[in-house]
Length: 237
Image 1: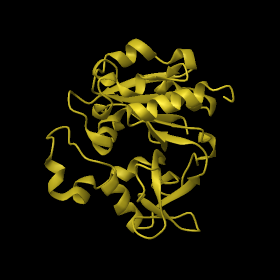
Image 2: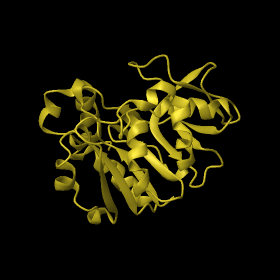
Image 3: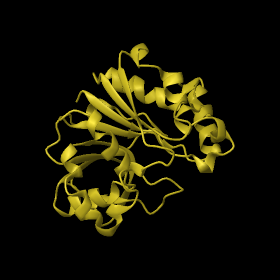
């Protein structure tokens, strides 16, 4: 697994006014930008090429992160335009910059102590998802992980998708058919989530997963950002 994609194009509306001047993945926690934690982990497992999706305040990413050489990485930026394309549209937009091999994709606004090296570099399925215990803000969860490591759209108990997974580019095959009428939204740059594609793949038995029981934070509010920052700065870390 030599390539990775970081979703960093969101508007961060729930975190205003902080995100009016700084994209959410560039907000600092524990003394460095949130996205830098991902870059360090990716470099540590041997990833050498990272594509970062951008939209809101896009120019700040290359200004802050440069070409990635400080981490031993090569960073390319996939600009989505002034309106973010969501995860599916962003993945489709970035696909020409990614190679033919499976790649790790991670949301730029999450933090975790999960070991990325534990994820399969060559998944047998179209996707291998990292799932976590349901946080207070999302008690219903997203998907069911069965005892055999298969992920299903239905079934109980449900876990929450961590926004981290390894994908084969073939996950995007037939995206127009899966989305139906929604496929036309956005014109040349369609906007859509990966969730319908993942659910379709789950229905075919082509999605596996791992339950991460360690730390994970969806940095979706100012309060969660501050709590994470305090935890990372505590002496135990």
